[in-house]
Length: 185
Image 1: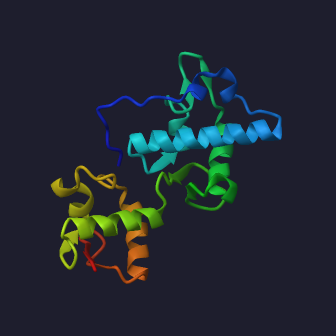
Image 2: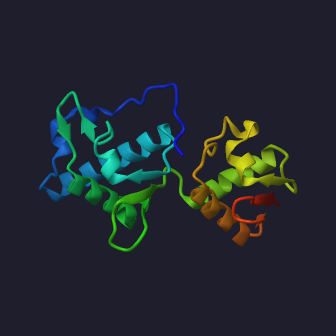
Image 3: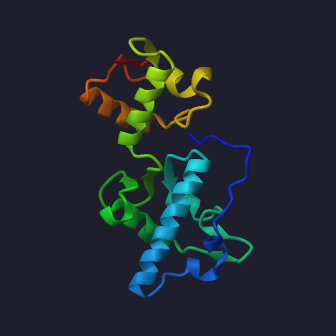
Protein backbone atom coordinates (compact mmCIF):
# COMPACT_ATOMS: atom_id res chain seq x y z
CA UNK A 1 0.00 0.00 0.00
CA UNK A 2 1.32 3.43 -0.88
CA UNK A 3 0.58 6.43 1.26
CA UNK A 4 0.35 9.69 -0.61
CA UNK A 5 1.94 12.76 0.86
CA UNK A 6 1.05 16.40 0.48
CA UNK A 7 4.62 17.48 -0.16
CA UNK A 8 6.35 17.21 -3.50
CA UNK A 9 9.40 15.02 -3.78
CA UNK A 10 12.51 17.05 -4.53
CA UNK A 11 14.84 15.24 -6.90
CA UNK A 12 18.59 15.54 -6.30
CA UNK A 13 20.76 17.61 -8.63
CA UNK A 14 22.19 14.45 -10.20
CA UNK A 15 18.71 13.62 -11.55
CA UNK A 16 18.90 16.72 -13.77
CA UNK A 17 22.16 15.62 -15.40
CA UNK A 18 21.51 13.67 -18.67
CA UNK A 19 24.46 11.27 -18.20
CA UNK A 20 22.84 9.99 -14.99
CA UNK A 21 20.42 8.01 -17.19
CA UNK A 22 23.16 6.29 -19.23
CA UNK A 23 25.34 3.53 -17.72
CA UNK A 24 28.86 4.85 -17.33
CA UNK A 25 31.76 2.76 -18.70
CA UNK A 26 34.40 3.71 -16.12
CA UNK A 27 34.22 1.56 -12.98
CA UNK A 28 34.65 4.39 -10.48
CA UNK A 29 32.10 6.55 -12.30
CA UNK A 30 29.68 3.62 -12.58
CA UNK A 31 30.01 2.92 -8.86
CA UNK A 32 29.20 6.57 -8.08
CA UNK A 33 26.26 6.39 -10.49
CA UNK A 34 24.89 3.23 -8.81
CA UNK A 35 25.23 4.90 -5.41
CA UNK A 36 23.37 7.93 -6.76
CA UNK A 37 20.55 5.79 -8.12
CA UNK A 38 20.34 3.82 -4.89
CA UNK A 39 20.11 7.00 -2.84
CA UNK A 40 17.44 8.37 -5.18
CA UNK A 41 15.35 5.18 -5.08
CA UNK A 42 15.54 4.97 -1.28
CA UNK A 43 14.60 8.64 -0.84
CA UNK A 44 11.80 8.44 -3.39
CA UNK A 45 10.31 5.29 -1.87
CA UNK A 46 10.58 6.68 1.64
CA UNK A 47 8.89 9.93 0.61
CA UNK A 48 6.03 8.06 -1.07
CA UNK A 49 5.92 5.24 1.52
CA UNK A 50 6.59 2.61 -1.12
CA UNK A 51 7.62 -0.76 0.27
CA UNK A 52 7.78 -2.68 -3.01
CA UNK A 53 8.69 -1.53 -6.45
CA UNK A 54 7.40 -3.09 -9.65
CA UNK A 55 10.17 -2.34 -12.12
CA UNK A 56 7.90 -2.41 -15.16
CA UNK A 57 5.41 -0.03 -13.53
CA UNK A 58 8.06 2.27 -12.07
CA UNK A 59 10.02 2.65 -15.31
CA UNK A 60 7.38 5.11 -16.59
CA UNK A 61 7.19 7.15 -13.38
CA UNK A 62 9.28 10.21 -12.57
CA UNK A 63 11.58 7.96 -10.54
CA UNK A 64 13.16 6.56 -13.70
CA UNK A 65 11.88 9.04 -16.29
CA UNK A 66 12.91 12.68 -16.32
CA UNK A 67 10.31 14.23 -18.65
CA UNK A 68 12.05 17.61 -18.73
CA UNK A 69 15.29 16.08 -20.01
CA UNK A 70 13.36 13.51 -22.07
CA UNK A 71 15.63 10.87 -20.54
CA UNK A 72 14.68 7.59 -18.95
CA UNK A 73 16.61 4.75 -17.41
CA UNK A 74 16.22 1.64 -19.56
CA UNK A 75 14.43 -1.32 -17.99
CA UNK A 76 17.58 -3.46 -18.11
CA UNK A 77 19.55 -0.67 -16.40
CA UNK A 78 16.89 -0.19 -13.71
CA UNK A 79 17.11 -3.92 -12.96
CA UNK A 80 20.89 -3.63 -12.79
CA UNK A 81 20.63 -0.80 -10.25
CA UNK A 82 18.18 -2.80 -8.15
CA UNK A 83 20.41 -5.88 -8.43
CA UNK A 84 23.30 -3.78 -7.14
CA UNK A 85 21.11 -2.65 -4.23
CA UNK A 86 20.48 -6.30 -3.27
CA UNK A 87 24.20 -6.97 -2.89
CA UNK A 88 26.55 -6.11 -0.04
CA UNK A 89 28.17 -3.24 -1.97
CA UNK A 90 24.67 -1.80 -2.43
CA UNK A 91 23.96 -2.02 1.28
CA UNK A 92 21.45 -4.86 0.79
CA UNK A 93 18.74 -2.21 0.52
CA UNK A 94 16.58 -4.21 -1.90
CA UNK A 95 15.40 -7.80 -2.25
CA UNK A 96 13.74 -9.41 -5.25
CA UNK A 97 10.27 -10.81 -4.56
CA UNK A 98 9.16 -14.07 -6.11
CA UNK A 99 10.94 -16.89 -7.86
CA UNK A 100 14.67 -16.93 -8.39
CA UNK A 101 15.60 -15.17 -11.59
CA UNK A 102 12.29 -13.33 -11.86
CA UNK A 103 13.19 -9.69 -11.46
CA UNK A 104 9.86 -7.95 -11.70
CA UNK A 105 9.19 -6.70 -8.17
CA UNK A 106 11.51 -5.97 -5.28
CA UNK A 107 11.34 -4.84 -1.71
CA UNK A 108 12.95 -1.46 -1.19
CA UNK A 109 14.46 -1.29 2.26
CA UNK A 110 14.57 2.39 3.07
CA UNK A 111 14.62 0.74 6.47
CA UNK A 112 15.55 -2.93 6.71
CA UNK A 113 13.19 -5.33 8.52
CA UNK A 114 15.62 -5.32 11.49
CA UNK A 115 15.40 -1.54 11.62
CA UNK A 116 11.60 -1.64 11.41
CA UNK A 117 11.58 -4.17 14.25
CA UNK A 118 13.43 -1.65 16.41
CA UNK A 119 11.10 1.18 15.36
CA UNK A 120 8.02 -0.92 16.19
CA UNK A 121 9.42 -1.99 19.56
CA UNK A 122 10.40 1.60 20.43
CA UNK A 123 6.94 2.83 19.43
CA UNK A 124 5.23 0.20 21.62
CA UNK A 125 7.40 1.25 24.56
CA UNK A 126 6.86 4.99 24.02
CA UNK A 127 3.14 4.69 23.36
CA UNK A 128 2.52 2.53 26.42
CA UNK A 129 1.47 -0.43 24.28
CA UNK A 130 3.69 -3.07 25.89
CA UNK A 131 1.73 -6.11 27.11
CA UNK A 132 -1.32 -4.84 25.20
CA UNK A 133 -2.89 -6.73 22.31
CA UNK A 134 -3.14 -4.84 19.02
CA UNK A 135 -4.47 -6.10 15.73
CA UNK A 136 -1.97 -5.79 12.90
CA UNK A 137 -4.48 -3.57 11.14
CA UNK A 138 -4.61 -1.27 14.18
CA UNK A 139 -0.83 -1.16 14.28
CA UNK A 140 -0.32 0.03 10.71
CA UNK A 141 -3.64 1.69 9.87
CA UNK A 142 -4.86 3.00 13.23
CA UNK A 143 -5.24 6.63 14.21
CA UNK A 144 -2.61 6.29 16.95
CA UNK A 145 0.10 5.49 14.40
CA UNK A 146 -0.74 8.08 11.73
CA UNK A 147 2.37 10.13 12.50
CA UNK A 148 4.66 7.09 12.41
CA UNK A 149 6.84 6.07 9.45
CA UNK A 150 5.39 2.57 9.68
CA UNK A 151 1.81 3.79 9.20
CA UNK A 152 0.49 2.14 6.04
CA UNK A 153 3.27 -0.48 6.09
CA UNK A 154 2.93 -3.37 3.67
CA UNK A 155 1.57 -6.40 5.56
CA UNK A 156 4.39 -8.68 4.43
CA UNK A 157 6.99 -6.14 5.54
CA UNK A 158 5.20 -5.91 8.88
CA UNK A 159 5.28 -9.71 9.20
CA UNK A 160 9.02 -9.78 8.41
CA UNK A 161 9.69 -7.14 11.05
CA UNK A 162 7.47 -8.73 13.69
CA UNK A 163 9.09 -12.12 13.04
CA UNK A 164 12.42 -10.56 14.08
CA UNK A 165 10.86 -9.31 17.32
CA UNK A 166 9.36 -12.74 17.97
CA UNK A 167 12.80 -14.34 17.52
CA UNK A 168 14.23 -11.82 20.00
CA UNK A 169 11.45 -12.57 22.51
CA UNK A 170 10.11 -9.02 22.26
CA UNK A 171 6.73 -9.80 20.68
CA UNK A 172 4.19 -12.53 20.13
CA UNK A 173 2.04 -12.75 17.00
CA UNK A 174 -1.13 -14.81 17.17
CA UNK A 175 -4.47 -15.38 15.48
CA UNK A 176 -5.50 -16.48 12.02
CA UNK A 177 -3.97 -14.99 8.88
CA UNK A 178 -6.64 -12.34 8.31
CA UNK A 179 -7.20 -11.54 12.00
CA UNK A 180 -3.73 -11.45 13.49
CA UNK A 181 -2.72 -9.59 16.59
CA UNK A 182 0.55 -8.72 18.27
CA UNK A 183 1.64 -8.29 21.84
CA UNK A 184 4.90 -6.45 22.53
CA UNK A 185 7.01 -7.35 25.57
